[in-house]
Image (tube, rainbow, N blue to C red; front, side, top):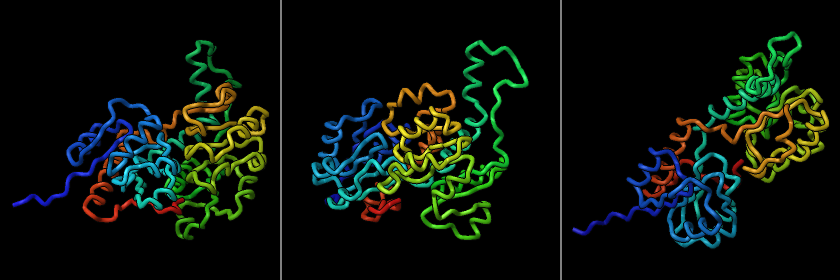
Length: 331
């Protein structure tokens, strides 16, 4: 009897993923795995897309319209390793009949933990204190040494009240912060009550009232430079800005100017417009806590992300709609 089973899909993986994910990809599919963990060049990415059924990219891969147009006819699924898809041209993918999936939900708690850590670290000057101790120049406790600001009783403004924004709100309430948020759509009243959150339909109005600002909106055409020079000027000089979402939502030049000129008290940044390049002016500022895009960097989160990627590929290969298909209007 002839074996009627379809051949395993050819799956091109652009970065080294957790061992368990790589092993399972190899067991289930005709997986083409990278030899080392570095971002693919554009030519390498183009060659991979020319000879695969499924591409598994990460945030370091810019999948633009030209790459999608030049892809081989077999490419039918881009199974992104990660929740954000602003690095993939969804319109071009849809025009070519290529399904795009992501991995929502699995990194919510990890990213919220990082945001809360920065909300604590920047006002309390934790990074400055750590550097002082390591420098050997600390002379001991004094009443005026390393004074920061308490966060209890302050107003936290959240831009983007999706899964991560809500998780941050729950953490922040436990530290005595009052929660304010701006979102495209208002949350159900029962959820607002649970979070103790006040909705601001006008972003500008919220910015003028808060003490700490935390960014949790996806990066898309509507949110590009959402916090530009004009809006940053609405923040009062004692405000701290936290961004664990995506670089490009905050105008980095305008933010750096505001920090240098004392028009903002400090910032906690885990994401950057031109990663891994960072403006030297930001590097020189003591009141900026900087982390290397590690908001989702937990063993548990990475493994869970890989499991979602594999599930999306398996469902597609079996002829079903993947559970995490991203629509063009995703936000």
